[in-house]
Image (cartoon, rainbow, N blue to C red; front, side, top):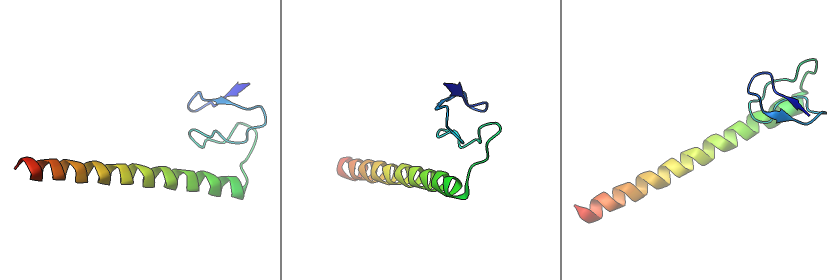
Length: 68
């Protein structure tokens, strides 16, 4: 096993990029498809975080409205 030089995440021996931070593994360049996959993963994570934030906001607003 090897480790990412940027974040220290453990990598598979055949890894081209770190799945945690997206950093290219030394000596290997990611393909266009791998770059798109990493971008899509980041977008998906951002959307999940935004959805959770909205749900929390709605719950807090409902509690304030109920108690007010």
